[in-house]
Amino acid sequence: MTKLSVNINKIATLRNARGGNMPNVVQVAKDVQKFGAQGVTIHPRPDERHITYQDAYDLKPVVSTEYNIEGNPIEKFLTMVLELKPTQVTLVPDAVDAITSNAGWDTLKHKAYLSEIINECKHNGIRTSIFVDPDLKMIEGAAHTGTDRIELYTEAFAEGYGKGDENSVKPYKECAVLAHSLGLGVNAGHDLSLENIAFFKNSVPHLLEVSIGHALICESIYMGIENVVKKYLQKLK
Ligand SMILES: CC(=O)[C@@H](O)[C@H](O)COP(=O)(O)O
Ligand SMILES: NCC(=O)COP(=O)(O)O
Image (cartoon, rainbow, N blue to C red; front, side):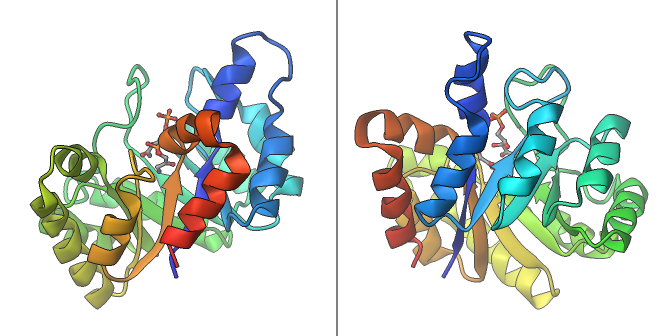
């Protein structure tokens, strides 16, 4: 079984459009867990354009499943993570002005930097994961940082698969096999959807967790969030 962690960034995007509290991100986090999701993911960005740092604190008491906080480990982010002690922190090298995450870490170039942060998080009882492109060299580099897990950046797969190229999953399969052999847990995320998740899950071994947000919320507009969460759970069995 692969766990589903629902990324609720887009619920906050909608809320922020009017400045009130509708939809309520805390209530949505409670509900997706009630519908069966095994985790809640947030990715607060420095400009707080969707999930805010305050949301991260407000969500802590209601996330009874796995709480996964993603982000670039700038000082403010790291302070918050060390205070909140979520189940998992996923380190993502996103630029301040990036519209969304668009690359994984260069784990060779940033080995010392990542190792230091990972060590600190692990000392505080937080599981660590680092966002990486499906590149065998980056997986080997990740193993040398001491991280518990990697998160495979799945945009290239989603794009290729969407155009009918089933071979786009091959590098992910190879990276997952290597990561597992090196003792790393394997997560994945970005642009996964009801269209591509079953193929990805059935092709990539050792997949512990997927975090899905953008497509899941879009699909929920038409099908309802309870129904959509349950459809993902069915495909991830
Ligand atoms: C790390 C990652 O893959 C992202 O998908 C991210 O967590 C989503 O962030 P946005 O909601 O800001 O696009
Ligand atoms: N880590 C990926 C994530 O949380 C959600 O990405 P997306 O489904 O919003 O592209």
